[in-house]
View (cartoon, rainbow over the protein chains, first blue to last red):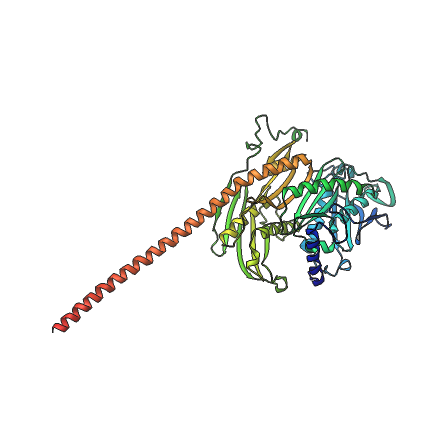
Length: 260
Length: 280
């Protein structure tokens, strides 16, 4: 990955300013940038959403295909979530096989949705042991200004929440006909924090990301569950940081959920 | 299905399916210094999990553009042998392997004095030979021992364990059968236990805040015990090398003594000869 010299200078500024508990853009430690969600933008997708987190922009689209179920769960469909960091989103992103950063990002969002049982996989079954729906949530980072993880997590849930289920006849999907909307059991949302010096701030922008020693993500659900943790980067965090992150994440997710 | 739902994961006596208590890990065996060609190495058995770790470096960074002029970088490679899982695994590293390698490497970076080795790389290869849930904790715990065995200066050992919930109970070190329980939650965590700093933390599933706190306590306690085994393995290896070195020193010393005695004798003879010649 290329390095931006200017960013490194600004990272120092972030650190110094946080020593006086101030973020460069004037936000509070637990304050997100402005969030905007646009829904159903693409007609070929069963559901789609575009999420703006300040200047960060991520697009998600849902497609369903028919497939065979896993042998150990014959009455369950499944969902797969993937994220691509397009070179158009940032001069730091390159073409070629996905970087370990991209893989980690897409796996966090994927697990956050799947393991929290946001979608009832039994409802994706068409005929036991023969046909099930496999849902693909494909996401593209369009503009990278920090915290792609949260933007992606919101976009994936928003797109799934809009998704219509294709109609199936004789074991085939009927084009342009739908049998109703996909119902989400819960809407897990992720909140990502940056540890910079002793400060823990939510929704870091690109400048703040350059300064962070550790990154920590918490996904929460509306029924008071934590559905995922992921700590990243070489820095460490303390138990108190995790506790603070959990409380902030619950509060933030409650507000964001209203927009979906 | 109904049969599986009836499975009792923790019985009335507080014992689990394999007879362990809720706060008990599977048996762990650690041996340091097992590979001839590595700078440091470790073999670790954790229940059915078996992992072999080697450490190379600090060396020059390749490719060169990845080098950092301020500090060393850690390249952690988590790899599963094709036969280490029930269905043969494609040996090519997949997305899971890449993610685990990334988070484990980052966990170790916090512990190592990286700034001592600018522009260099420390390579860790963790090969999983057999697995049964908890292989990343095993790999990371072993890697930390291998790094110490390689003589790489560290602030503390990194110790990992998984905690989780089965059947509504928080338990330490889930095995595969427990991980497959219907409500199972798995949370791998690694600490530098002296400072209680969290260097690795992952979780998926549905956990309440209270359960997280209970899980953290249990993990921290478990980690203390596992760390003792890491230290013991390193001490054993250190004592072994020390004994070897001492033995070698002794050998050379006795050789030296012998040679010096010989020399003394020779010189005595010589001097006697000299005296004799003088007398003549």
